[in-house]
Image: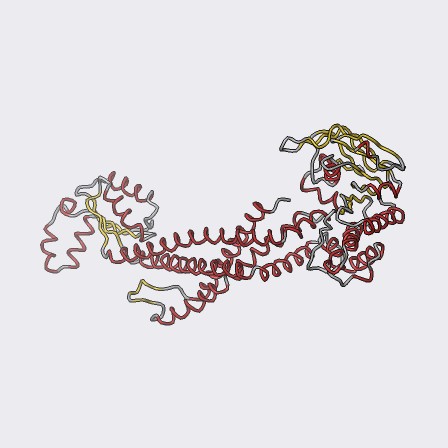
Length: 301
Length: 233
């Protein structure tokens, strides 16, 4: 059959059956809407946390001191080790004991006399590395990995409120994701049931279609399209909520910032449209997964 | 005339263990009108169902117009059915559609163009004598008229073969006669082959067509211009 005509036929029928099973269709649509709102929240949180981590990561440094008397070989081995660590930005500042002695002399007038009396700085000063991380959420692991090296004396980073807050956001994002996944599963089942009812209510029509030689595609398409429509209608409210909700929230912020410099939220444009697109795609996919499951299970052709 | 249908060594055993057809051989020529007669459970419905590939034989070959129906894949069955017309005892009309829409439906779902649908639908309804009732709904028609709508739907795509499974089973003698007359007309005017399963003695005796009698899944009689033979049933 001409593809265009087949799709037109399918769409017309899908609309008809949404109207015929209005209450169940509405239930499916609302279920998808609720699910997608949670999905939208999870997405908004996840993308923003990603952004925070990046911003915060630029401002957090792990200060690492090597053991006193580290040899050239130790240094080379340590730097090779650093190159192998994914989370460490591969540009770092390094201070040798000699350099540290000099900076001590230059910076601290009081101590400059003492400083200049030190003859063997490597016996007094540790090698110092200032390291930055790619993902601040994993900074604790990175610090521990550094500490585990024999050559490292200490490794610390300053403000751990940053990481604690990011942890918190991550947990919130993860909870939202779990809830969203559960809701998606429930929604799929509800859609399977909606389409099942449509299939049963049109049993006679389907049997006639089979007898007169309608192709399997022609018979199945309206139901798949019905799932698609339910998904599409279900994503309307979540998309509006995302667009207007996030805008309103962002407008309340001080130029996108919340409390500190690094808690900078993503600019609504084009971010909300991107999130909206993902929501529509998820909605439509969930609808079509539900309907194709129902078709496979209940529509034997 | 050339053979349209040939069955060779066809066996059908249902999953519940009932054997409906034993080693059946049958051939039907183009343009024939054949009554398949037999009592309940004789296997005549199974035979019809195998011809439109609703049932698959366990053994043997069924060839319709060169298509090996027994080996036809599920996904290709629709190609066979587009070349057949099928009429059932219970009419199988859609109650919410008018007479016209019911007939046009068969063309719509196979993707026929709309002006072609209109021409073919009206012609089919004219052939069964229901052109005056195209706007009525099925429940406004008599049983005979409803069955004629079903026949119009079966012939709307100009099939070369029409299969009828007890088309007069729900009708009184007068209406039965009317319906079979319509089928006979179609057979004569369009040259379509008609196979009709029935246990309606009067009809069979009146029309003097080829009669194939089936008993317990085997062909027991095959007459040209036959009659309903009580002994064989």
